Structure formats: C-alpha cells, structure tokens
Length: 536
RNA sequence: GGGCCGUUAGCUCAGUCGGUAGAGCACCUGCCUUUUAAGCAGGGAGUCGCUGGUUCGAGCCCAGCACGGCCUACCA
Image (cartoon, rainbow, N blue to C red):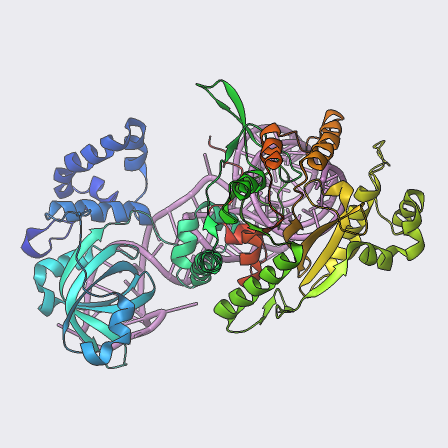
C-alpha cells in the first residue's frame, strides 16, 4: 500500500486483503458492498485482484476517501469541444470549460493527456501537476477511461498541433465502473451492439451518424408536410378494431373497461376520419405494430409516415413521393444520387411507373393473365410454391398476382419505381380505376428491391366500402387472421361524406436504411426487438 | 419450420494432432511535464454459452439446449 500526497491511502482490490495496513480500509469497503446485496459481498471479496472493473470500483472508493463526490449534481460548461476546435483562432489563450467522457488517457509522468469526447466532437485535455496541484493530480491518477469529467483551463495548441485545454481545474462528474469496449476496433458483436446500444453509440461513430441521420430524416419529413399545409395528428395506438393493412395484431387488455384492445397495425382508418372531419391535409409519424416474422426489412414495431390529402388522388401522391425523396436525398447526400449496399440509386423525378398487370405479364407472359388456371400454371412453371403443396388452398387471382410480384418482380426494382394499379381483391380500401372495376388506383414504392410505401386513391363510397370489408370479414371467418374486420364507426364516418382523397404510407425505418446505407432494419432502430437474454 | 455459421478475459481476437489457456486493448505497479492506437519495464485478470456423453485426459470430438448472425421457407 503506497501513500500518496496528503497521506491519501489508495485502495487496491484483493491485494488489500493481504495487507495489514490496508485492513483499516475494509470496513468502508464492506459497507459499500453490503449495500449492493448480501450475496455480492462474498463474491466481490473473493475475486482475484486486478480485474479492471474491480479496480475501477476501488478507485471510486479511493476518491470518496479523499473527499471527492464521484457523482456531483451539475456542471456549467462554457463550450462544446467542437466550438473550441472550430473557434480556436479566437479562443486561443482564453479560458474555456468543457465536459465529456474520457475516451483515452496517456499518462506522462507528472502530466498526462486525455481525449475528452462530448456530443459531437473531441478535445484533448492536458493535465500538469504543477498546474492543477498535488490534490487534483492525485484525483487525475485515480481516473479511468470512461469516466465523465469537466475541465476548466486555457485553450492552446500542443507542439504537435492538437487543440487542447491546459487544465487548471479538473472535476469528476461521473465515475465509470465498467470498462469500455476496445478502443481501436470498437464494439463489433452485433448482438451486443443491439442489446447495449449505449456502448455501440459510445464506441462506434458510424452508429451515431446513422441515428443523427434518422433524426434529420424524420425532421425533414415533418417540415416538408407542415410546409405543404398538413396538420400533424396523433391517433389511437390502442384500438378496439384494427385495420388499414393486412397483418396480425398484438393484443392487450384494458382492465377498467374490461376490453380487448389491439395495438394498431396502421393509422389509416383514423386519419381518414379526420379527412371527413374537414382537416383536408393530415399526417402522422408513429409506431405501428405487426405480430409477424422479423427479418432484414421487418420489425414487429416500426415507424410509419401516413398522410392524407383531400381533393387529391394517387397521381398527386406519386408526385409528393418523388418530391419528398428528392428533398431527403439532397439534404443527406447533396444530390439525388447515392448508393445502398453497393447499388447505385438515383431518386431524381420522374420515377418509372409500371402497371402491375404489365409487370406480371412481362415475367409470366401475356397468355397467363387470361384465366386463373393459366396463371397458376405459369406461376408453378416459374417455380413458385403457391402454398397448395402442403394441403393449403390456392390463392385467388389477386393473391397469385401478389405472389408473382413478390417473388419475380419486386426484387428487381432497383431504380425508384411505382408499381401501379393493383387488383381490387387485395386492396380493400382503394378506389377502382375509371375503366376497370377489378383494378384500383393504388401504387407501391420500390427502391433497391425494397418496398418503401403504399398509396391509393381512397375509397370514399360507403356502400362499396361495406361490400369490400364484408368480403374481408368472410376471409377472416375462414381463418385469415390478417384480413380486415368490419369497422362500423369508420363506415359511419364515410356515410357523412369523405372528399376524394389521396393517401400515402411510407416506412420510415426503411427510408432510413436506404439513406444511411444500412443493411438491415435493426441497424436503424435504436433498441430493436430481441429475445431476452437467458438469466440463470 | 429448415440449413449453414458463430459463442474463449470487460472488449477485439488466436488456440496446431484431444494433453490442462494465449495476444492486443482495458486495468494495476514503476519510469516518464507537449503525448495522441504515446513509449519502456513488470503484473494481475477465464463458469472456454449451458447440460450431458465419449476419453486416462475435452476449448477442441458427439448429442441436446440457449442466444445471435446469414440464407431459406411460411405468413401477407
């Protein structure tokens, strides 16, 4: 046990147990440990010396012993690191106060350096014993990488040119008790990056950039719509009847109402009620929940932008989509071109518009569209599993078309493309085209083979809507959990008259993926859904 | 649901033929007052994911399980 300045005794784990002089420190140490848990006490003391996290805790105890509060309440800083660096010409020689996490420490005898990282930058601290005094230098020597500190001192440039703060006063703001991931390689393990996103954010600059971009994207979407006169709305997430998409819902229960409720799978039916209510242009950015499989583009909870515009149709929605994507690309990439996973993308308008039936005809032949039987034969010839092989029923014509789109068309839509005019059968909320009652005015957005959005000219004929939902209810009775239910209140709203309206839904997470060159949806969701770690 | 791969120190990773655990970072000690992946010298640190099995002996071979990744299928 060594004695430091002012008779400070330093606690070392393990080693202290064997040291007679150190035994005096044990009561303090045990009190702290007992506060954690009874069982912890034994294991903590039995641990061999030298484990980094034990040493960090020992350093905490040593700091307390010399009267340092390791977790003080607040700290006034005068500058962020980036401000000192960017404004150095003006600030050189003047006093600044900065704060942040120490991401590296380089001891140098009776001096030392540290990299102090704050929200969007880094500045070097230079601590000299003859500047801060013996007492504070003793504190400095008990600090570890990962600790959060504040420092007041003069802005200067070192011999090698690094903008630094020559510290006059050093303040511990939060003692870290666990070591950070490796400083050079960062946190690599994907599971840990998702489960302990805070460590991912501390150690990986690219991760911070992705979520900064995400924030900007959402902000740009909001400003874009507000600028066009849209009202931002918040509609129910807990819904007694879910609709607006094909998906299984999460169920929950309201105790005092004794009511089964569902987490919404879409915002659609409530936003349309607002169009009935006269708001004319509404949007919502919020979470939807779908109780289905997870993969690179599907998360059980995801963020959707939905917007509805009275007196517009799906053509207007296509133009709106093009404008929004052009704006986003310009803001994030400085132009309309960017790459996603090695693929060149250019979102410059106008985008390709391809009719669904034309796209299907192109992959299975014109003849195959003459009858359902011909389409089945063509699909099977193309090697598609139509689901009947395991004793299931063959899908209807619309379902077949959808299957062919999924398997043979959509993956090849790399350049931005609107797939337009869908079969009515698979689009219960969209209005028919003027010239074909089996086709609706609907489009989906594809970029890089990923479906980014869905839009239609909204069905506003209440009687037709009742017939469409009636067909859905039948499917549901037949065991299709993803079919719509009848929403009487929504129908009643339509009976009061909804103006002709265009609607558009955009998967925000997928847009973020695309614009940040992220390979999967989990990479753009801060805390993606994970199975809990097994605790033993 | 199926296939393949992964799981070793807090982190990033080695680990040969089955022979009793390694490096770097981090942590500690000593030296070092302009370093910056600081340096030099020394030190400590492990439930080899879990449970069984085979074996004189298992990080390594076998089986099952858990978690994760990629692909695939299903669902729309």
